Length: 123
Image (cartoon, rainbow, N blue to C red; front, side, top):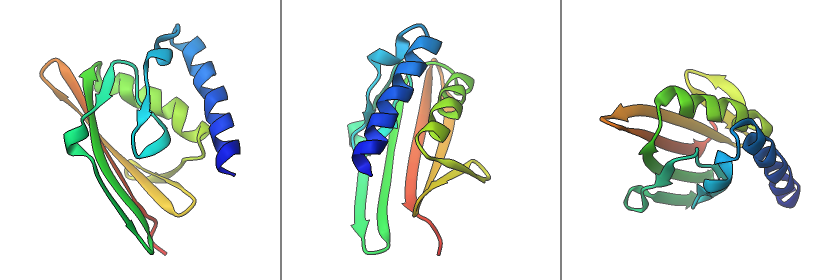
């Protein structure tokens, strides 16, 4: 299943590259969520990474900083998340399987800051 998800993610990544004129190719993925891409112009802040694995599921907290706008980041993820299996949960949260993803997007001067939080879904 993970291989199928990664293959699908690569296909979507290619489609996003066409949509954005190739800018996606310069991006990467979050270090601890290998199928959640970073928007173009953003880099993960390694000092903000926090990961816990527990019996109920994993908790991943991190942030990315770079050039762009909150609207641009939201548009990027609005296109990418559904294709990667994330479904709208409400209140800015998305769920996939047993996990919930929450993004907090803000502007800090000329830079955009994206905070990511993945937690186990409430059962």
